[in-house]
Amino acid sequence: HNCPFDYRAAGQAAIEKANPVVKAEKVDKF
Image (cartoon, one colour):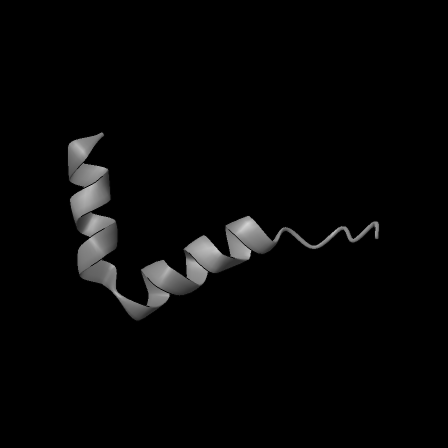
């Protein structure tokens, strides 16, 4: 199965879109 779609990046984007607070906390830690 060779799929060019990046499920990990898409999943991360979906999480960030659904919960910006989590994104803000992760950015704050880095």
